Length: 173
Image (tube, rainbow, N blue to C red):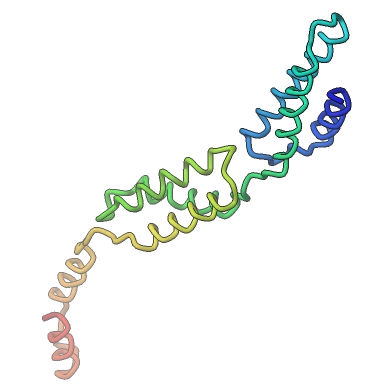
């Protein structure tokens, strides 16, 4: 029985059934398969493996085979969001109240690098990061406004109508 299960497990492995499977399952599957193959070789060489040990190896390998469909989430959108967030993170000093962004960004990076992230994890990290980026507020910077005020104050106004000068003065005030 264990031999037949090992054959099926090898077919799954070689048939690329493990592609995009969460890493913890891939590791467990391959480890269990290797143990079962070793046990079969030892069983064939010497008759010192018990039936209960063979049964336990079969059950273990079957349990990992049942988890092969545990696929990693699609991280495409998260990758794009994290790339944008990296740019923001590099200029974080331009923003105020950045704690929520920093937490969401760090979590998104963890999910992105995880081989065990399921689709729900990816979606949650994406939504949290997008919300955090949308809620960021830039530090107040009045340099452009001050430049405009200085430019208006230095304008030569005699060539303009009284109404336009009055409108300009109201806006300047």
